[in-house]
Amino acid sequence: MNKKVAIAGAGITGLVSAFYLKKAGIDFRIFEKTDRCGGVIQSVSENGFIYETGPNTGTLSNIETTELFEDLSDYFELELADEKAEKRLILKNGKWEELPSGLISGITTPLFTAADKLRLLGEPFRKAGKNPSESVAELVIRRMGKSFLDYAVDPFVSGIYAGDPYYLVTKYALPKLYDLEQKYGSFIGGAIKKAREPKSEAEKKVTKKIFSAKGGLSEIINAIVKNTGKENIKFNADTEIQKKGNLFIIDDEEYTDVISTVNAGELPGLFPFLDKKILDDITSVKYAEVAEIAAGFNKWEGISLDAFGGLIPSKENKNVLGILFMSTLFSGRAPEEGALLTFFAGGTKKMHLARMSEEELLSILKPELADLLGLSDFKPDLLKIFYHKKAIAQYGADSKKRTDAVKHLQNEHKGLFLGGSIIDGVGMADRIKQAKKIVSKISE
Image (cartoon, rainbow, N blue to C red):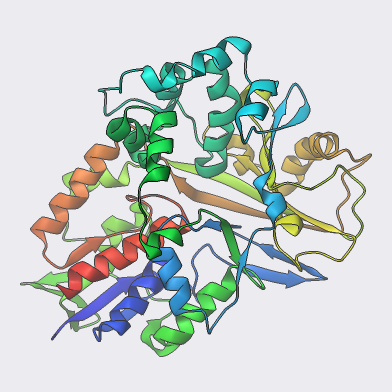
């Protein structure tokens, strides 16, 4: 095809792009600024525990992800979360409550007010919204009521974006929810109609189950690298891309196409030839800063961990955003009688927590965590803290301007593809889908 593609970044988006380029027989080269693959994805095995330093799980939420894992099935073992993970806990008035999963539990739960439970009966009959810039909070209050925002959607948004539902715009942050209302007229009616629609064999595999890999998410990264070839990656690359006619130049080498997967702030240095004014609409994206804490216990003596984890609504005014019960979700993450938990603090509402020293942060979190977990004292046998300055892009009201700027620059510079979490979603499945979509365009 006489194509040669440069990929900036060896994270999940860049590696999946390389995987499909190789399948298509297209020459490529990855330029990675660090000395390792995987970006923020990294699994560590230590003293009987296996913990993650970045993302902890993914969701089988699209066809592209299930197809990739089928292609890689000989190279790693996919692990789906234990059935106990179906149970989600929400903190209310200092007590853990189970998030309703059906009609009966929805009626009896103390999470929502009686008025909002009655209001929910009318949800299928409310008109669809007409404001494409409506925030997640505004949408939920309009269709379901304030208590559903406070004790279901707000903690859910904290779990995905570490963000503020009043800032995030539904059309961009939760597009499936937005489309459900726009296409079907309501959440409840839409969910029922969608469930009844015939599905292809590929669509049936999109189970929306939580996944990892035996040994941690790094095993997925290792599987992709084995299939793409480590020799095709240049590590510790201080990359600057120039333009010469219709070609892109890196280290005097010519490339017909370039895929960028880097954070927004790195784009001006990577592409000095791009229009600065238009680029500003991309680099202005807001990121949540997050502190991630992995805590391992050789013998667990706290509350029952028979759930996915616990999410903490903003209304509860805690410093912890949420807790994942990792040793419940996946096997081999902790000693037999022990537990591995992952905590998150910071986010857009309490960014200062993610900027504290470890000592300062622990002095605030330890008593809170002991209380939340039913422990007399918070003294884990393993404790690791990781700071993520550019953790999660926030899809607010500026998302349309950012998306339009990406399209403009790609149209102006044929062969340029700006990917990564600046557009198209922030989850692992989103990154996989985006990578495959980009390679499909290059292969046309």
